[in-house]
Amino acid sequence: MARHRHELSDAEWAVLEPLLPARKTAGRHYQDHRRVLNGMLFRVNAGLAWRDLPQRYGPWQTVYSRYRRWSRSGLWDRLLQALHSELDAAGRLDWSLWCIDGSNVRAHKAAAGGGKKASGAGAEGHALGRSRGGWGTKLHLVVDGAGLPLAVHLSAGQASEAVYAEPLLEAVRINRPSGTVRQRPERVAGDKGYSHRRIRRWLRQRHIRAVIPERRDQVARRRGRPPQFDAQQYRRRNVVERCVGWLKEARAVATRFEKLALHYLGTIKLAMIRRCLRATLSNRP
Image (cartoon, one colour):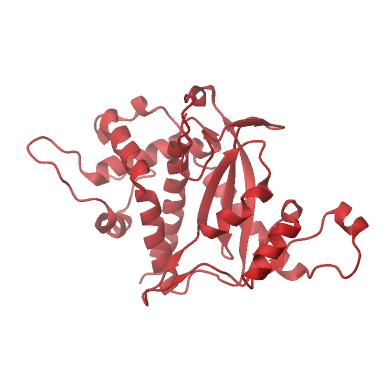
């Protein structure tokens, strides 16, 4: 059978198959994981409603229920950790510089009505709010020096990016074959929105150099020496903006349709998995 656009190649499936849950039910027709995962990826890229999935992916209820179950079980985080570990073992992760940034995402009217009960991993409530860009969500992203996505966090659209800098960086945990976990790069780059004494102190305590320019008001009020700033390294910060642009090529990422932050977070992480998966395969012979 011909492979459709956005579906997993044989090489990509060979990487993911051992990481997916084993089948636990028997006695009735079961949709295989590859077919269902292809349906999820198609929906992420096309941005259509679940019930509009093409028939080749099986019943849309099956694809949606498995997506919801895997999102709640933390499967996407485990897949990302496995891919990050493989990239690190191959020397493909750039520890010399990590870059952080935030980007607003407009919410479709279908995203309203999630209810009063808070639901979301790494997000307060449903992570919806009104900013200058309209009603939506803010996506906080950290990438390595090569632009590979490492972690994502959601907040309401009007939230300050600086508030989420520390939890975003703490969320990155790269497991190594020796059994150790590495979390700290040599430098972290961010725009002027991250120029806060709290963030600089947090980075300094962890022996991470801040590559963050001062705001104009801080320069005017400053007394004493200015904080160190490496302009050469700061020029590399655009990799996080390019990564955000790549993720938003997926229509279900560029516009939020999900009512629950947890489900929208799963959509973003699926796009991140695809990005890391391609980087992993490019390193293999």
